Length: 102
Image 1: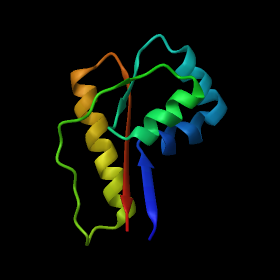
Image 2: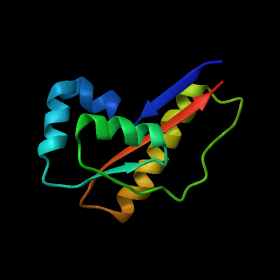
Image 3: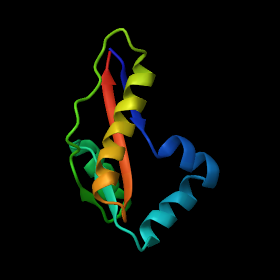
């Protein structure tokens, strides 16, 4: 059994500015950070980093088609969550994430 995570921010933002710079920016950001995930593990990870954040669970139906490539599916679901929350909190920095086990 394999677990696959996707965080909609990490792939692009960390590649562009680097992880330490991104973390520093999140900690100093004047805009609120919202985690668009109900995952207790993600809450724990952000809390360990010392980043202030709120949690808003997205009201979406996740795509769970077993014929879909797992990487595509988790990236799609992470983006759905982030988009849903961002529409309702336009002044926040929104982090969407998803995990699947296959």
